Every structure is written in structure tokens, then in C-alpha cells.
Length: 366
Image 1: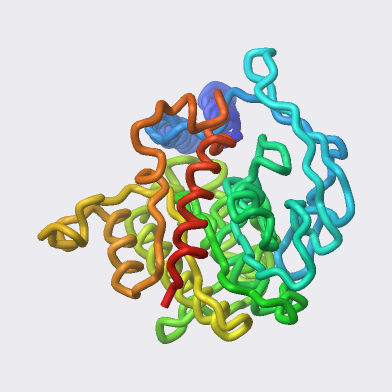
Image 2 (image 1 turned 180 degrees about the vertical axis):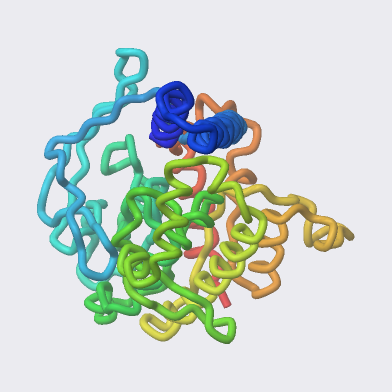
């Protein structure tokens, strides 16, 4: 869209050079055309250098189409008490055709549990939700199966969510009804894409919860859209960044630093809320660039790239963490990911579920 606007400006400016009278007007039009041409070139270059969007080239459909509906606290959430048929094709061929079963509280169905069973709550995005998988193949469902169907696994997740959604869900009491249950742990799954989500950098995140840091603590301020309306400069920069790649690239390093600090603060706040609400630990599964030798080997975190440093900081806070790459090492990517899609396969979830059962059931967490 941005390239189209710049192209239109160039055409109109060049027309002005020809049609307008007076050297001042013609010179102004020529300068405008030159500036717009330069901006178009920079924008095209920035767009070419930007990483390709996840799932680019695929076509996804759902029936019903509007199964993710507005929710006051989270921005959106799966609609309760519904079954969703989700399909994806790539180059005209079916990638998956699955049914998602959504329960009364907006969570995705897992296996039934005995009365009074220990409860494990899983918070996440499409990885945890199990996009492209049957109900029984998600990580929470497979964890329950690995535990002999003797535990209750709650899959409270949605595609596109991030730590700001999970923190807000607990702060707003959306999971308080589980406080009556014996909750033994809360499990979440983090990926690098969450960094952009905590600052609302995604077209679907406008109504999602926005947090800012105050004295190192995250404070909820409302939605991203509400903030952009109340702060026109912030709104203008967001719109310009969505339209023009080169605008979005301005100050990108500072933006990434801001995202990292907010991400860490939200994860620590999540652990705090899990303790307050359920008197339970938070277990973090992560698919993230990391140094597998740290902290076992003598490796200094100061030499690590920014993404790895974030994992170093979470480890320093003594969060129980499970590196997904460790559990899936030695297998081909075709076995671990849905083809042409990139989301974890049922087999990958099975490997992770086995290790989670070992971590959460066999060895008590501190």
C-alpha cells in the first residue's frame, strides 16, 4: 500500500512539472518527485531485506470465519462452545484439515480428567493452541495422555497472543475459576515473535492489552488502539510504519531494546501472578535462539547476541525452562513441523510432552 501511495505521488509530481506554470511550481514538483522516488527506493529495499512473513504463500480458511471474537480484556479470544474447521492449502494442495473444539471458557478441548485431578494450565499462542493439529495432538492434550489421563490440562491459548495477553488474563481474573482446583503448574511457550507483540507491532493487535514499564514493572494502560488515538504522534508513527518499511526501520534497535525489557518484565510478572493465584510454579518452554552450553560451560553472557541474552536473563531469574530444541534434536525438520506451515507437528509435541511429564510429575519444581 505504501509503495502505491509513493508511486501516485511521483506520477502527480511529474505531471506538475509538465502542466504547472512558473519555475517555482515546476521546481517544487520536481523536488517532490525526486524525494518520493528516493523514498520508494528505500522502502522497496527495506521490504526486500525484511524477513518473509511466517506462513507466506499459504491459504488458510476457517468455518466459521469469525471464530475469534472481540474480548474486552484480551482484545480477542476463541468463541466459546464451538467447533471450528480449519484448513490450509499450499500451491493448491491440502496442508491440513482439522477441527478445533472450543470449550465454555474459551479454552481448547483436551482429554477429560477424573474429578479432583491435578490441574496444569497451558498459556500460549498458535504453538500452544496447536494450529493445524487435531485436539488430541496439541501439547497440553499430549501432556495429559503422557500422564496417563490422570491430570487435567487446560489449553488457554490463541493464535497471535503474547505475554501481554497471558498477564492480562490473570490480572483480569479470567482464570480465577481454576483457583478452586489443585493447580500444580502453569506452562507457557515463548518464541521470538512475542517481542514485537508486547509492543503491538502487528495489524491484528490493535485491541490487545498494552503495557508500559514504570520503575521496571509492567503497568496496563488499555489497548494499543486507545493509546494511538490518545497520542496522535504514536498513532501516526504506527500507521506510517505499517505503510512504509523504511519508516518502520527507523529506530529499530532502540525499539528492540524496548521490546526486550518489556518482554522480560512481563514474564516475571506472569510468574508472580501464577504464584499469587495458584501457589504454583511457572514452566517456560522456549523455541528461541540460545547457547546450549550456557550455563554449564564457562561462557560469558556478555558475549551473547541480544536474543540469547534475553534467555540468559530469564535463567538468572531462576525460571524453570525447557529448551524445545534439546528435546527434538536429531530429528528432521519435516518430522517436527507441519509442511509449508512451520507450526510444531504432533510428533514434536509428543517429544515435548514426554519431557514435561518428567519435569512436572517425576521431579517436583522448587
